[in-house]
Length: 267
Ligand SMILES: Cc1cc2nc3c(=O)[nH]c(=O)nc-3n(C[C@H](O)[C@H](O)[C@H](O)COP(=O)(O)O)c2cc1C
Image 1 (cartoon, rainbow, N blue to C red):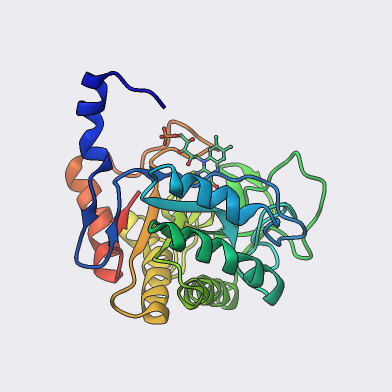
Image 2: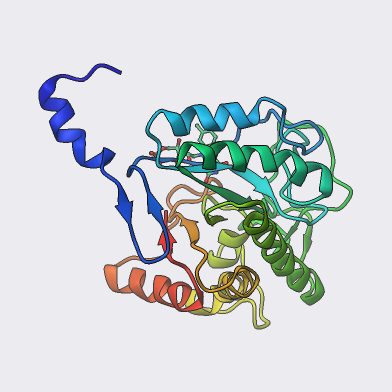
């Protein structure tokens, strides 16, 4: 890319190395997670290592992967979205991690469970019904089943297992997909979390329990020094006007327990 001298000078800080207590990056350019839909039955395609390494070589200091599914039968309904579990998929992620690491940049997989929001364009049906906090996609629209206590515990464990695998493969960190109206966000949002047990509640703090417990489990699985990022959003694809925090203080009250549970980075 050709920049004018003025633009190059203004952009220079972006290309300076970044260093923090837990990780260092050769530049501050971060590639956002982007679903690519090129996996085959959940296994990253053979071209994936070069796809990611090409971005890393082009000054991206941190490559966050396309969203990858955690080990629950209904984590997603797209077979061309990769999994981060199973020997076949993990064996295909290994050269991706190795290829990005070889450039000096970092690779962090994004871990995903879609909850009640499935891609309506895809006809493949997972071997289990959609699962979510209350079996609703949005207020008034029922879809799938409300998760049992055992489902919730198994899902938290699935996030932790995927994070442990990421570390084992040599990834520099992990990102939890807690945004855009998918499972973790479905617990945050009162519109999709109507539970009356300990996983629900009238306050955002109460509805954050699933995220907090997931982060704690991930932290326990990866150890103290491995970076954990969570992606958050106010808006939901089911409801763009949704807001979880209305003021900076409410935002801080939302984020603080996530930090205390083990989050290092917010996206
Ligand atoms: C094709 C495509 C796939 C995307 N897939 C994901 C994804 O898997 N995970 C995610 O968190 N965001 C995903 N996003 C959102 C992007 O990460 C990003 O937020 C979006 O392109 C807007 O860019 P901005 O955040 O810089 O405004 C996707 C966006 C696009 C265009």
